[in-house]
Image (tube, rainbow, N blue to C red; front, side, top):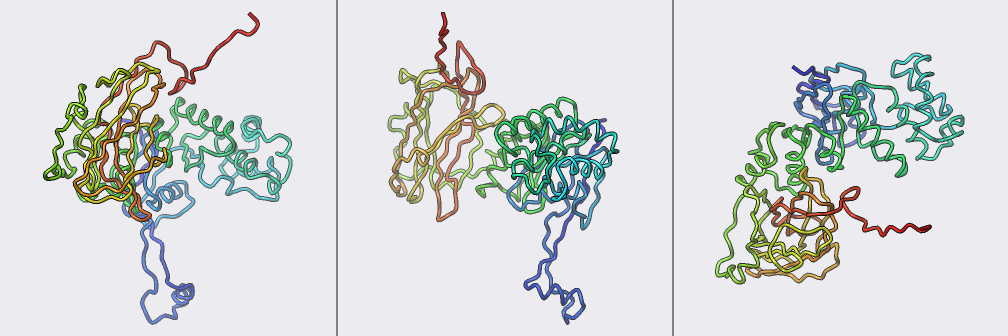
Length: 446
């Protein structure tokens, strides 16, 4: 059985909130006639999970869900109001970078200060110092007081100290994107190096691509409570629904880490409410245009308020034929048909292409493209097409479609078909990354 690196049991964190600052003083001095002038706010409520040794676990959730609070309690920055934390291994935490720095000390002096606080001897820090300075790459400024540093130099040194102490457990809170683009690259390389070394990693991020790429398992929090945990793709799908208030919290069931994305999609599709087509609408007109000749995903993950409904879609190749098999560099058209059940003043039509892990590769919508759209009344139908050249690398992808919009300042999803079908790009030449830059190569001295 895999040994546990971090065990969180019934973790609770309560803050006392007061309507007026003087109420806090009155209560502290016992001057109030009431038993309490405060009300309890649960930043975390009975959260439990395990992180196995060598596992990479992500925590996602909306703002205020308790992600950073959880990490701070695990690292000892905050004390819990209830519950128990068990940590088996030396932790390095990338939370509030540089929080332990003395602004009057030089960079070198702060390296030794932080190393001592973590528990290293002077001799151990001496051995690690060259790696720390090389990683930070701030030159002679390391001998100057950190109060003279730019914000970029400050976080570079703080990150270098935290990442180079050879921890057994690495805890990261949105700290991988610090400094300029070159330093960010070094940070991600170090992160990947830690994974390959079998280190235990627990991290919080709003970057869903990083969550999908690095994590073995993901925990979903909301308003201080753990909703569920499972495979990264499943959790990212649920999180996207949570963001647009389309997640059925009452009927949410645990998702095992081994569950496939198809299983999760099937579960969500079964739970999604279905809307009938508009009465009196002839949706069969030109039906061949809206019924693809290729297979749809039998377990489409669909959700939304159904004020508008995607009732047909297709992919046309360069010859105008229905096909989800496209040659790299060829032109294709993605089209969809939307039926409106209620009036929507400014609908937004969108498509997204993802890889098989759910990472967004490309996509656009009518708002990004600055396409003027007309208000649509109940019973009306809108047909939309997106035509583009497909320069993605050869491989397998998934297509998602959506009709969204805004109600006041709130973003709403009317209907989203997530991973409605597969998309295969056939290529005779693949280059680096997701896209081909179509470089023209010339040997100038021949």
